[in-house]
Image 1 (cartoon, rainbow, N blue to C red):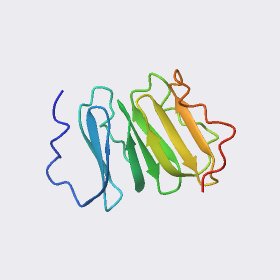
Image 2 (cartoon, rainbow, N blue to C red):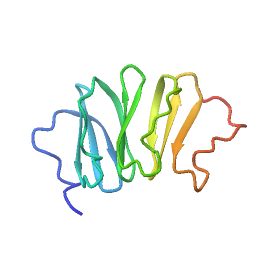
Image 3 (spheres, rainbow, N blue to C red):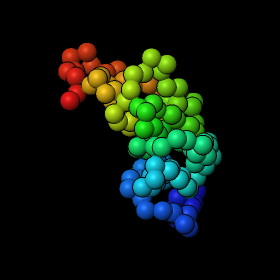
Length: 131
């Protein structure tokens, strides 16, 4: 696997970066995401998107937080890590693990989805709202 350490030419002013298993994604100052490196599962095939606020990279998937608070994920969906719950409320932050994704809703509730074999999506009921 190669190419993940070679940023594409013409990349604008980068304001955020996310490193996945074998790919890297950069968010530029205009809210545009560019991903590069291994693309075996489509994790670098960034679809047409409105303005992006942040990006997260998992092992073989990528998630973006859009300016309107929605989350969109693409790439390997073997464990439903790209299946954003329909009832997900507006999100303030998104994070990607190897085979799962977590979203912090603006109401302070943490939601996780995808592979749960190690209970990584079981948000403890005792966890207070995040502020």
